[in-house]
Amino acid sequence: MKIYGVALLAGCFLIGQIMGSYLGVLIGINGNVGGVGLGMLLLVLVNDRFYRTRQMQTETKLGILFWSNMYIPVVIAMSSILNVKAALTGGWVAVFVGIIATGACYFIIPFLSKLARSTSKADQQ
Amino acid sequence: MSGVEIIDNLLIKNGLVFAFLLVGVLIWLSDLASKKLFNKRIPGVAIAIIVALILAYFGGEKGISDYAIFSGMALLGGSMLRDFSIVATAMGVSLSDLKSTGLAGVLSLFIGVTVTFFIGGTIGYFMGYTDAVSFVTIGAGACTYIVGPITGAAIGATSELIAISIATGVVKTIFVTIITPTIAKYIGLDNPQTAMIFGGMIGTTSGVAAGLAATDPRLVPYGALTATFYTGIGVLLCPSVFYLLMVYILGGA
Image (cartoon, rainbow over all chains, first blue to last red; front, top):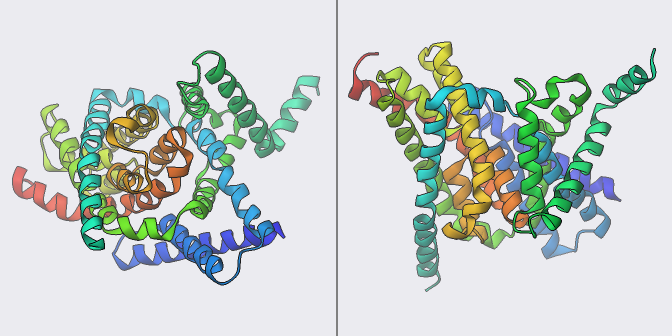
């Protein structure tokens, strides 16, 4: 049944959120640290476990895949509710800082990924 | 009640359902435009996102959802469904890919926050925001629009500064959303490993998610996974270590 997949997803999501909130308290931030990421890790582990022992029921999987596919429409809806006006009226400081500081990070990505590739190769040897 | 009012009320009452319809039509039109006008050079998703951003401009603080009739967009695009569907994308993630990039992913988070903070703060410095509190608040805003205001509030920044830092974070999100599909091939952003590093370096979950969605939807979960830790690390570092460091360098407290 599809609802099993949706429920499994909801479980991973909520446990991740709870863990993220505790992590936030633990390091002294009043907020959620990586709750979404932790939920994703949980789902990856659960999925991997199912894959090894017995195949997850197709219907169950479809329940999760539906929400996974809803992701793009959700992102489009999200773009339509951003405070775009404020971003443009925040003055030139906001525009310069936002673009230049971010642009610099794009330049660093190739170096880091080259580094990651060489270290993971070294691990294998 | 007039006919228009009846429809108005109905659409407001069923806001989420109306949002499904709106987004569906928007994606359909964008796909059509992508095929007919741009010869598929610009992906339909990217067009839809840009149109959505333009629509948001005509709204207010919460974009287009400030109009009651579009309030359902805030539910569909709000943090609950956003995070829920991002977690769902983890179904496409392979455990071995995660393991092989784990360390680089973590490293990219710290490098990303640090580089963004200091470059952001420095640009602010040269544009006249020279004291430690301004430096830190603007630098934190360059991380994400959540790190900025939390940091600003923690170190006693003025509301004008906090507004600038939020605006900086929103500019970043929009910039990342628009620029990522264009720049992807130049930075080798076509595999899970690089996507994880990208998520860690850039950090704005909304921007990373939207940017990757328009680049290659299969990469979304990898980027989102690391990006969701970015704001937490930014909030951890900016008002503490970085603030103390900047007070030491620029003076004042």
